[in-house]
Amino acid sequence: MASAAEQMAANLSWSSFSKAKELQQRILFALGLLIVYRIGTYIPVPGVDPVQLARFFEQAQQGIGGMLNMFTGGAVGRMAIFALGIMPYISASIIVQLLTAMVPHFEQLKKEGEQGRKKINQYTRYGTVFLATFQAYGISVGLEGQGLVIDPGLFFRASCVITLVGGTMFLMWLGEQITARGIGNGISLIIFVGIIAELPAALAQFFSQGRTGALSTPVILGVIVMAIAVIALIVFVERALRKVHIQYPRRQVGQKMYAGESSNLPIKINPAGVIPPIFASSLLLLPNTITTFSGGDSTGLTNIIASYFGRGQIGYLVLFAVLTIFFAYFYTANVSFKSEDVADNLKKQGGFVPGIRPGPKTVEYLDYVVARLLVLGSAYLTAVCLLPEILISELNVPFYFGGTSLLIVVSVTMDTITQVQSHMLAHQYEGLIEKSKLRGKGRKKARR
Image (cartoon, rainbow, N blue to C red):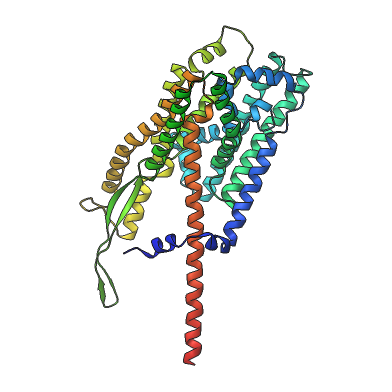
């Protein structure tokens, strides 16, 4: 027999959505801020020559420039005020989370509750400003070196750095507002909207390559089948769960003795979701952004980065795989599934895993289960992100058909829909409570 929650979920419809006014306001608020973000991707940085910039990106489109364009919603190709995107903020978040796990001061802040969390967020913002400033200055120098600036000089560098850093900080604020007052994860939605917005142009480019003969019909069909297969795999794995059996002891309420209950603790095969590949891409984009706009010299560090860590190169693929696996374990252990907190909550509620003692033994067991699941989860993330990348780099297919972009689009869509359903269920639950109160008042009046 279906539970009450399952019955309410089955009754979700457009009529119930039309009654959830708070949910509608949240969705409209999120859409409004995302529209502001898209407008910002068309406002250019002052002093950049648009004609020369367009020619430059025609040559860099199949390199790391195409990847930068994908993650910034086309802002890099237009050198807009949001050209840095949200990646400096993500990179700063990674660094702060690593410090939280390794440095005692940050670890203590993490245990101080709300005040500690505010302090950590403040450090993250400082790190974002530093990384964005470093990246923006590198881009400004690179733009001058490539001859893409109308009036090069100190004034252009200062204005470019201020504009790009300000755009990144504004995007960070937009993401936080969407998360707090809108629907879904704001940072993920910003990346998601940037990919979706440029997808029609990528499709047009893809099919035009077929018309011109650059890509054969079997290759086009193969890429389409690959994309469908990757989407199906993402949906299957993201919904897959490992259920840990939880037993609750018998309890006595007054004179009545209630039998022990049992339930399941669901653990996803990929608890970290889309965060590991985003983190990995963010770190790899940091040096490659400078390389894209560097001078055309054939020696030095920039040439080494371009040769071994450019998009599709063996160094890039290996480093991407290592970083994805590392962040899958790191993010799960520190953010998405903390075994200590789960075991502590079970102990407080009187629940236990059959055959496992509550406390440290439960923590060890949960760590063991999660570690085994992450072998599959990290392998799935690596395969989904890298296998299409290898094919695409060989065939010169647009980056929007890559595993990373498909993973972000599908995962963010699923997470956002889940949050919408949760809000609708909460609205239905509140309606049922109000109806029960009204019925109770009616019965009292009838008795009087």
